[in-house]
Image (cartoon, rainbow, N blue to C red; front, side, top):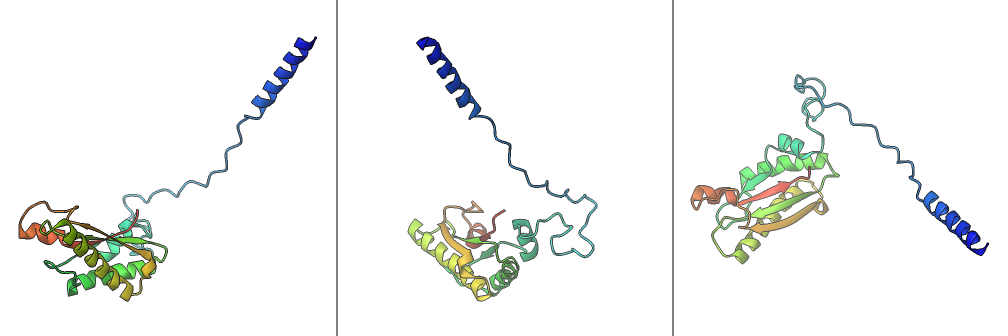
Length: 177
């Protein structure tokens, strides 16, 4: 009798354990996104220039590049001075950033292959900070901008000539996808 009672208790305990593992009803999912615009939608109409109807998501990296023109400013040799061309580019970037106050960016500083690693890391940081200062002066909150220097570690051009070096002396404004 004692064995039968123990077996019954064991069976009940096992049933309770299994019942406790029942699947929970999944949480209700949000509605699916609206359908993508068709290829014939050229952005004409009231939403032109805003990302609406253009296939470009407002606040996205693609919209930033579309409206700012570029994410890159270039610098002279051994310089972190923002020239007039770079000022125009950064002003366009700042207009977009002011219009999208929730977007945070990273400014990357880059250098050409010449010079020591330490020198180029410091120069890359000065370049990124110069670009940041221009954005802040144009109304972008400084706490939305992170700065990082890659020195000469991430070239866009691999040649060892002036044209390649000029492409690598840059600051890049990185907007998340």
